[in-house]
Length: 266
Image 1 (cartoon, rainbow, N blue to C red):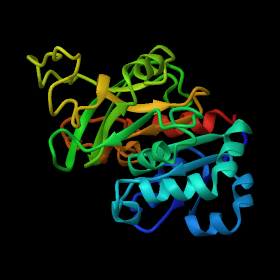
Image 2: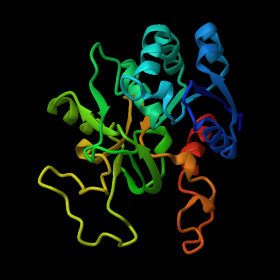
Image 3: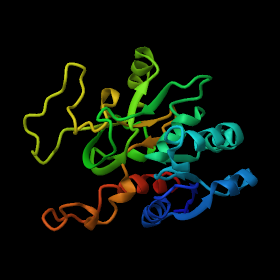
Image 4: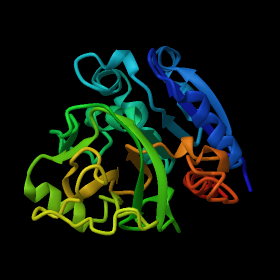
């Protein structure tokens, strides 16, 4: 199997780039962390890679809004580069702040459109949420989620509430299988009385930000561009689990996400 090369694109304020590189290399890829300015200077660099990943953190201090400045740089200076990257059959992954960046660039997620179809906004709780949550895969459209039914991963964000432009857009994305990752009920029985609200939402903190239809991750119409608020790169080793001494497991739940990306090029 060929070893895919991964471009980890960081900027001032990114702080999960090394963890993301470790996760990809654990899965069998070769990762390289590159500053955004290097790609702005030489966009042709992207052609040397098969996977592009934008990691979590607080790019540019989350000034204006989380991911907005980085997203605007992509929109105005790297639009053609990233669209060509996707058109070449390659993979793009945005994690947490990376998801915010992708969706606010307005050129990759959910799909190619003249106007934004969705956004990620302030959590309903009005505060930064840092906790572990249960997830389920709602469709197999996304390359990164192939064969994955559920995961237990950490989240850490203040602006993770997914909202579509309107109900018609939300229904279209849902029926197309693009709302591919959802917050879920605990599978360890820790919330036996939890019930969906009238709007079909899980109660807080199971849905930690109030996202429409419990959306935690979204893919484009090809299934090869994926953004998610949880951090799969933070659950790679079994000891990353908060109860690892009591709930022994062979590996972290996040590994499969990165293995799927590597397998795609096998």
